[in-house]
Length: 137
Image (cartoon, rainbow, N blue to C red; front, top):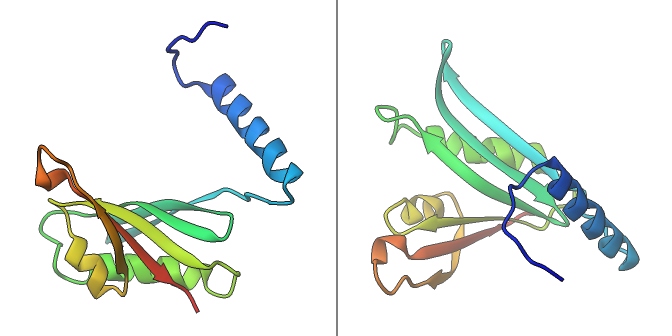
């Protein structure tokens, strides 16, 4: 056996997805990985976006960004609400996300997320990881 660093291309991605799907199926689980993205626009200008994926019984928010000059106006909350409304009633258990210390951990708590735990970065607290969860009804 030889291990080498390679480019992450479609061949590697297809291999990983196929093997994961076989393993999940052998355990009676369906991943059903589905990426999503919602965009906030003012006229034709993109002023915010949220992206992530749903799989298994959870929804993961990967990115949430609001353009400078539009922050603090409720756009981020509206984007999170759009995700919640879209996935409402589809059998998902919770929404998860992770943010860094220099970002907006308190913002997510205002949106109803609970702080599950913090992973400390011993050299730079701005890079502490804040893991949040919001259980769905």
